Structures are given as C-alpha cells and as structure tokens.
Amino acid sequence: MTFSAVLLAGGESRRMGTDKATFLFRGKPLWEVQLETLRRLRPAEIFVSAKTDPSWRPVEVQFIADIPPSRGPLSGIAASLAKIQTVHLLALAIDMPFMTENYLRTLCEAIEPGRGAVAKIDNRAEPLAAVYPRDAEIDFRNALAGNDFSLQNVIRSLVTSKKLLEICVTEQERRFFRNVNNVSDADPVIMWD
Image (cartoon, rainbow, N blue to C red; front, side, top):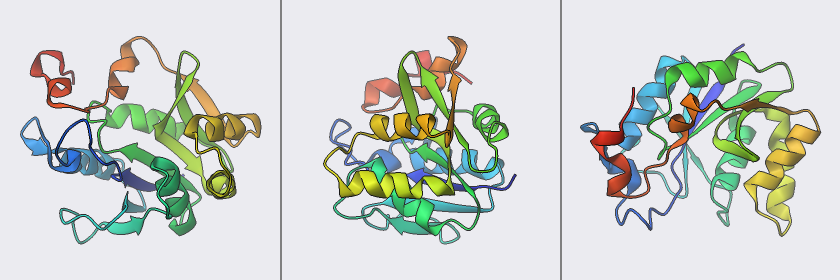
C-alpha cells in the first residue's frame, strides 16, 4: 500500500535550548537522520510540518504549515492529512532518532484501507511514530476546533472508531521511542542500532 510521510518539526525545543532539527546526532543533524529514515521506506511523497518553513528543508521535500494557532503535533498531523495524495500518512517526530526503518515498516505493514497503526507502550499511545488513515483528518480537525488538544484523546477516539490499530511495543522495541530533548539524551553510551 502506498503512503505519504511527514517529519514533524514544529516543536519549540525549549529543553534543548537550540533548534532540535539542527542538533548533531551521530554526526548528522536530526532532520537529516529522520529524513533518511523516511526516504528508505520509499513513501509516495515526503513533507516537513512546522510553524514556519525551516531553512534546512531540502527543496524536494514539501513544506506544510501547522494549522494555526499551533497545537503542536495535533496541528501538524491535521494539516498533513489534508494535503496527502495517498490514503495513509506516516508521521515521525524529528526528536525520535532511535526509531528504525524496520519498526516503521512493521507499522506500515499493519495498515488496511481506512485504518492506520499506532504503537502502544503500557497504556499510552506513541502518536509521533504512527500511520494515520486520511479519513482521520476530520477527527484531528474536530479536536483543534474544541478545547481538548490532547493527542492521546484523539488517538483513543481513533482506536475506538477502528481507524487505528494499536500495536503493543515489546520491551526490546521501547528504545526506539526515546526522544532527544536535551544533549544528555543523545549520550553515545546508550545509543542502539
């Protein structure tokens, strides 16, 4: 099944103190690491979602502005779902560089027409490395129009309505979901392949 991909880069990097996208991880800026991972999956199209068009965005990657006022990834995913030419959107956060191509491929293999896939650790969804069906756009827009901007609540609703399949994360796979929010999170002692 063909799908589109979006790199979610709209965070403010408050804890990092500098733009996360340009933070060097294994000798490369995070944006480059994450785009390489997405490219290896061969999506039909790749987007970068942020509040403003980042200076580092490669020309062949399309920019999608978060739906204002920005509500974080909720706005980025909603805007991306509105623009895709395929029926599924793979979303990946810029600060999740331990995520692997193989794990993302596993999520993509679980999708069906009208249904995406989201990882679940314990009782919490991992919505920033997930595949959403295009039909979920209305759910994201409804959340943005309301007062509850919790991405977890949107995910629960999508799971209940069968638009998302939850996939339980194994103990071994938990490491893929580590975020790099400050310099110590990228400690080479705890980096895995």
